[in-house]
Length: 292
Length: 312
Image (cartoon, rainbow over all chains, first blue to last red; front, side, top):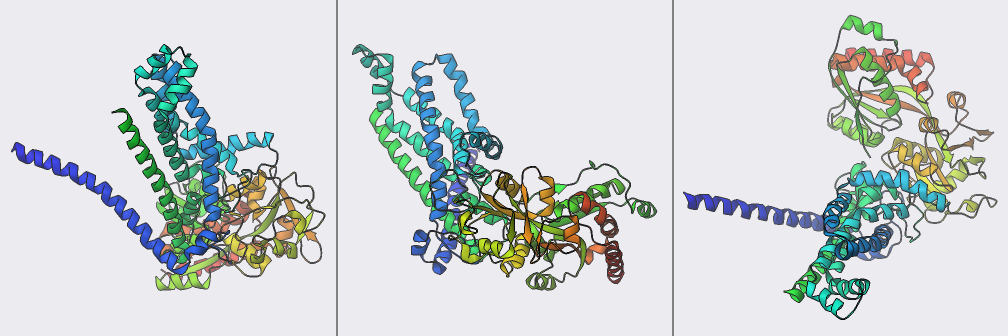
């Protein structure tokens, strides 16, 4: 009897693991098949070299670059904003803050990641953009700067929390050795602990980047819906994710070439996040070898 | 973005025409599904809100999928009534026929397409249709990017364009009136089916230019600047008068609702549509549109009556 029970439990655990793998394979299959059909009509060369993206309009262009530049631009702004802040927070929490403070502040910081992204989107549109317009008068109502900054706020906990874990995991013997050499607390933190935890910090940054690249609601609401190849943060742009949302909600006919553009855009996005996740996995493995 | 609103009993309970008829019919119940144009939405919403005071048990849900998106659902029999800011296209007619959907077209109000810029824009006083065409036609894509390309005295600054998306009847109408071919325009502008997004975009950008239905301008007068359009004789701004007397051309148009023939078997739909025709004149004015002459409403009501009887 007991054996059967164990067997049932084992098999059900196995099947739930298999379900996630099956779903992933299914997604990859659908994406590839639809994207393959898309690329049988539009050449890959045009897809990566054309500088215009207007598949829904009269003069059709299928160049992913404007969408890709939008995605990269907003992600870059987000990282540029989140990295210094997130890293400072993690160093403070790990090396300077009292234990009790760390215990209560860390979960609070992680709350930032729990705010629904649609709330962040409207925050960017109706609070951050008007505020920035006071400083930059030519800033458009939709722009990548404000969307990027708010996205940066959202990913701060990814960087601060994971980096803090990495900093905290550095063995105390390193700290003691550093103090023994006569270095100050500041020197110990920045010259010894941060380099020692660098691979963990890099992993946290990569995860934050891949989160930023896949972010949808904030950019769909606050960054605009106009694909354009530019790195000017003050004008409306469109990201890959925002385009997919726009087409999914519109009345584009299923099965048409216009409809398949979202799969082509989706697989581009997938390749990017996949590469980033693989990279972070590799670095994490290296990091584990170092300390065990 | 598509939003579905269920209208709550929050409307002020003004006594409207039609209220006395319904007392004879008694209380009705059921759900009426409406979807379609975001331009017609404010009128349908106002009518539904008032109707709620008369028939509190009838639930009216109104979607905003754009005229094209609305007709798509209508042709599959998923909605009872479709809001439309242009007449039904042949392709959509064929889709209805395929699914055996018969319908009646009812004209309910006029709308003007407003051309708008940022309130701090002090260089534009008017547009000619040719200038609008030069800005919006497909050949402008990636080429007409700056204000001074339209008139040399305008600033050497990038023009940021905002307009309804391709699922919108407003887009179809504007492109037909300005470019000369429905659905034909440049693609490098911020396109959204949600007019509030366009208001937000134009109001937040000094070098913006956009267009949408007049009613959304009426709601946001303080945030936007309305630009007159040259009709061949003079520059005309869209107002109640100029849209009604036809001098605001070519950017004024009629708005419609389409009623599904199988739906008129339900008394609540018949009641709602009658109430709609009775009150569309006054309510459309309330929300920023232009009523039809009253004899047109009587004619619409008569044709609806025939339609109901022939589908009993």
